[in-house]
Picture 1 (cartoon, rainbow, N blue to C red):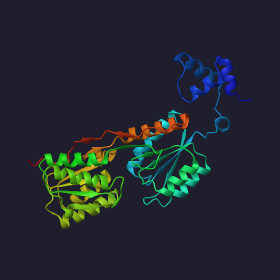
Picture 2: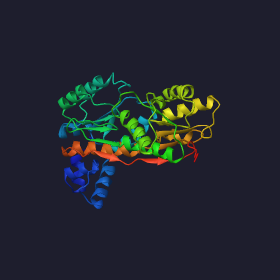
Picture 3: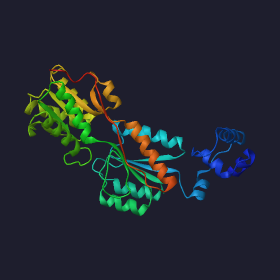
Length: 334
């Protein structure tokens, strides 16, 4: 017969609640107690029963994560942080790919409802009212990642996109660039689109540089769209000396297209990205970019969600710090 949590508690001479807290890394016990419980678990070869545990605490120890594009490098780096934190706290993850325009978001929310997940991490997408209404019906905690909303009880973890874009363009201007094009994300996107464009415009304005609509191009945050936008820049605004892209993938697409057209980066044109993905360090030349601490954001958001699940209290939103990572794709022309 398989040992139970009660057997562990009796042999270790502690309460069942203490064993449970040790299993879930919840604290409230001494190191000596933890060592004793861990030793007893090994001696008895105790395996926690997820079904039985769920019947006791009415939880499945599972959280749902929704991404608009699971295959993107951006989602991958967030997911590493999420999975690391969640695994260390004895939860598991169900990952859902909602698609770029959210075509499958409602379908996946229904699926997560059927699976009775304990909470949801909602990433990089606008929280529409139809989503919010369904989440309210589900009565599970939700934390937004790289998104935010005015709906109540929806804490978020992100960086300040306006300020990050402002700082990127300010950096390029201090390097002597005044004809700076921007490759924005999806047109009209209120989360990662409009705030970054406003940061771009305000940084130009702060340096007495008039905004030129001919220098604003749109992509979809993906590599291919960055390449297409760069081709348009070379055709329609060949006088620009620098390009700020609202994602590293678009910046790398732009870099590739510039190279294909016989330009050297940064000697002929400077390019700056946004995110600081691992790819930014791997391209040649390595990409100067705005760093979002994506791994940390994933961990912080997971921590807030699990705290909400365990305590029933709403977490506070958090703006994480960004920084400029200077590599080799922006030339000083002063």
